[in-house]
View 1 (spheres, rainbow, N blue to C red):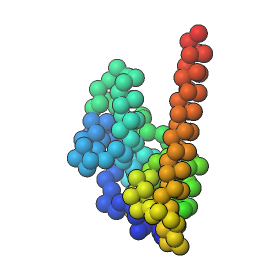
View 2 (view 1 turned 45 degrees about the vertical axis):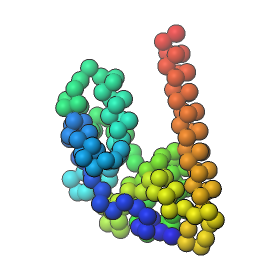
View 3 (view 1 turned 135 degrees about the vertical axis):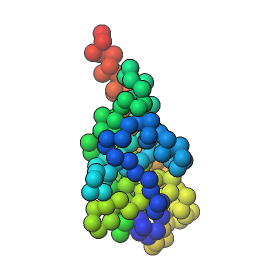
View 4 (view 1 turned 90 degrees about the vertical axis):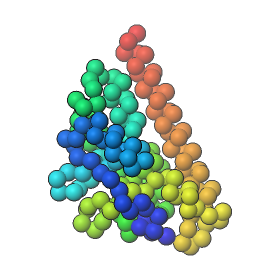
Length: 164
């Protein structure tokens, strides 16, 4: 099975110079928790999540209208191609500790987004030639969650050490 078979196709995006109030409004309207960040040429440069917005506003003395996407989103992004096999995309999610991958077309432009939720929704009890097993997707999600928890514990320990 290919990424194009499961990805969400009509994806809203945002630009690096947009402010967080605008981005939050897009997320609210589209009922999503992340947006690919695209440059003027339509190339994916990053991704911003609702969590990124919350952390940014909770750690700054600024309003959402004063903070730009480029000030918050990481300058890296992991993607997959719309012609990639689902297994490859899932491996990328696990190895990079991400739950969402912007999908790019053959010209490098945004074509959709694939989330671990999409994979779980379309997984099957047993893996087939064209599908992926529920067990594999659940194991991948657990791996991502465990890695995120380890990262948070490590970050908290570093914060305590710097303020001790």
